[in-house]
Length: 93
Image (cartoon, rainbow, N blue to C red):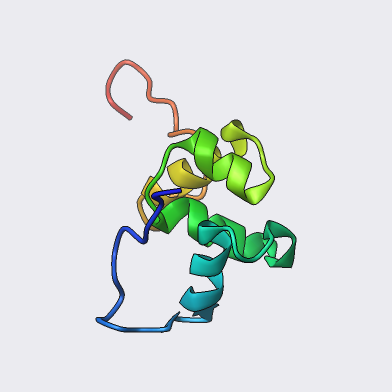
């Protein structure tokens, strides 16, 4: 699979925060099964590695819809904890 990290945290970094990038890359490359990953690691891959939702879902053992939701969650602005924006009435409030 041609999935790769979208954003390199630092050149030659082996970790990004609490995530072991070598382990995650091994799963993406198919040399380590997805069952070795925690939910947080699967979300990290979905949000930071390139690839279609379908291909990433197959790789992680989750549905395409789950991957799409995780990607959408990453796109939310900080502080926006709701699934949908608040509704506005006619005067913009």
